[in-house]
Length: 332
Image (cartoon, rainbow, N blue to C red):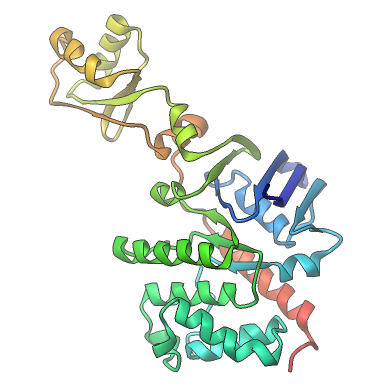
């Protein structure tokens, strides 16, 4: 039976009168890919800050790799790797120099430092570019180097904060190939945040947080089943008339968005002929699709997931400050 590598119990974080995290509890299993999703201001970044020892909780308890995030901060920090949304490499240095500095800061023993750096660079297929300045790297190469850096000190938990933000689809696919390979090879736990719902689908389980509370936690497939059926979308010149007719004829409350009028039904293939044969409002098109995580997120939060502004950059600056403070005097 796998043990819990992250344990969160009744966690609360307040900033004055604002309750950013409101009595949440969850566990993450060792070796699991755990997706943590939430709209802007939901409490996602604050929770991660607590787990990474950047914020102290107001109340409740959190443990990572068996260490208390308040009383054993140094042990927690040595147990985690971080790949930030915002780039944090020194572009003036080459790949080797970036990793050597990170190993130096984390006190990776000199005897294993060189071997470990070569290992992680080969792992992400950057060994041949090790002496090239990072400013000449593509976005995908820089992301791979950041992942290599996050793994350099053998973390038990790797936090991936929007790991492929801004990358093209092909590069995103390659990055995820690396991440999934590394998870298997290194037997690490991955704690993922992303606003790409196809990426969230690789998680073993997903927690959705909104207004400081966890509103759902389950496997991606189980979350999709919460929708209750297929999604029918109608395009029409008169959305209000279409919604009224759907309500009157079928007792279904439809909604509208930029794509048209949409609603859920248990069996879309059987419902569409019935709709077409009896519908009086003019239709331009009708389509059906299976539920996605985007639908789940919208249903649970009433909002579309989007990039959080500013929180990740602040977290990166705070983390650099803690690194400098806690490892001062340990280098060499």
